[in-house]
Image (cartoon, rainbow, N blue to C red):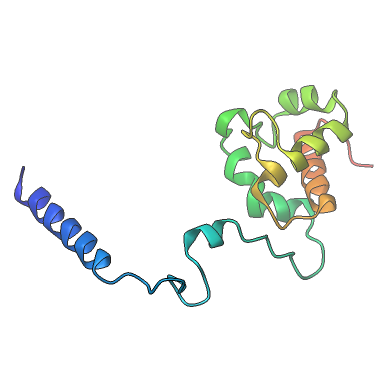
Length: 138
């Protein structure tokens, strides 16, 4: 073990001992206003306030995190072949997959945009279809 690892181990041990020595009082929140991490991750998503976002705005906000780099097979927005294959399933199927999630959650529900409305998710799907050329603007 080198000196950096030894120092890290001592600091970690001190942090664990220090946190164990000062527990929250029984029945008291770990942090004011919360019962801790579990409350935070299970808190319902607050609805977004404001006017609906466009498909491009939703894409920029959430979709591009995976679709801009083809994460786990997510088709790139300019890939006419992959989007064409998907478009042949029907727009309603694509939108359903985007809203509910698909392929063992590789496509997460709402593309990870928990506060996106159904209309906003649909607009994002339509944006990527049009951008790819698989769907012509009407």
